[in-house]
Amino acid sequence: MASLIACPHCGPRPKEEFTVRGDAGITRPAPDAGEDAWYAYVYLRDNPRGRHREHWHHTSGCRRWLVVERDTMTHTIYTVADASAEGETA
Amino acid sequence: MRYSAFSVFLNALRGNKDWKPAWRSPVPKNHYDVIIIGGGGHGLATAYYLAKEFGVTNVAVLEKNYIGSGNVGRNTTIIRSNYLLQGNNPFYELSMKLWEGLEQDFNFNAMVSQRGVLNLFHSDAQRDAYTRRGNAMRLHGVDADLLDRNAVRQMLPFLDFDNARFPIQGALMQKRGGTVRHDAVAWGYARGADSRGVDIIQNCEVTGIRRENGRVVGVETSQGFIGCGKLALAAAGNSTTVADMVDMKLPIESHVLQAFVSEGLKPFIDNVVTFGAGHFYVSQSDKGGLVFGGDIDGYNSYAQRGNLATVEHVAEAGVAMIPALSRVRVLRSWGGVMDMSMDGSPIIDRTHIDNLYLNAGWCYGGFKATPASGFCYAHLITRNEPHETGRAFRLDRFARGRMIDEKGVGSQPNLH
Image (cartoon, rainbow over all chains, first blue to last red):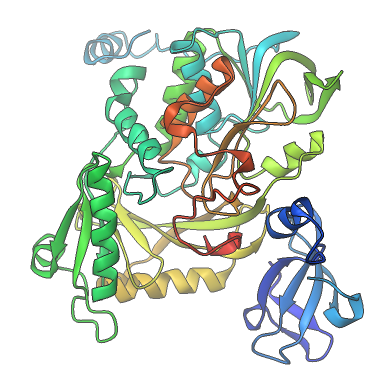
């Protein structure tokens, strides 16, 4: 994991200020979406070897939820954006 | 050649010129009855038990690197069966029983050392939890002893008993737990499987899985196409990468776990000891190095290396438990990639494809499970039904609400 995450609000900050939540690709289904949709939401995750989009929380900073795109093999961070800009997820 | 004290003596007299490689380096055949993807501990153990116990010898183990280059050579070598839950305990106890007879069984010195595993507790609530766990173990026929503060102090006088925040009140001990030389486990299983006709093919990465009419017919590899009757995945750490080849999405994330070894010291830690107030576990190797580890780093990673924040956390927990560690120098640290499943327990099951089998999700408890995992997986592959101790490790248990969540933290893989 890279040492710094460039928060769009606070600038480059040490990664210890952030908390990872995980796969940003999952969206909370409607309450009546059915068992398969809920199973996928609760248990199935994208787990790529390479580029991955994740939710990170800037816990010790602006406390905003961010979407971080990074490489799970090289730990390079490509983009960091505020999660609200990504529309409705999770 | 069978290894014995006599063979060592005889070879010494002959100037040690007659030792043969412990396994061959065969050219892959066109077709095997069973192909196992992954030449780690579990893959090699599966091949060994397939050949020895279930009579299937036309087997290939495909390893993308060299055998033992993954997690079987990257763990802290601890074995134990101190599990609480019904689905776990008989399985890990089967593993412990197999460990106890392993060296005689595969005729290789794996340095199985049942030196005892102690889990420290620091509060009344933790004592209650460990009492419950110990009782569950005893009900399953596993040995467990609850030690009070004085008993622990006599065994491990160097612990920080009067820590102001986390005073040590006692420990749950499993005397039959201990350590095993992990590389020798890979080598012993490889040698045993090879001598029974299994082909161990190293530097052979699987790049695709070929299917016809809904069945697997073989695998594309860096050494060409190899056909198979049945395909068995044992690629923990990289299970998702392989499962993606057949469009199977798994309830698994890959995370990195670090481990450490210190400079060689005179013997002072006789057992395996785990901290109850933080995540830290330590034992001392026969060379004198302290082998220890802590928690996973917490983010998805396929890199076999971790972050300094975790190193600092592990060091802090270690010093809180054993103040004498503060001046010990760390020799090496390394990382291994773990299949973190959604309930912290593994998967040994059939899949949506008839002749494709899955062994995955070992989190960071895979090493101690190696013999039972291989045995149960070989049973599943040959008989098409699970071994009685591995019945709970189904892939569909998440959808059916039958999680085996030993830690009770829910579907958050980085917390298990």
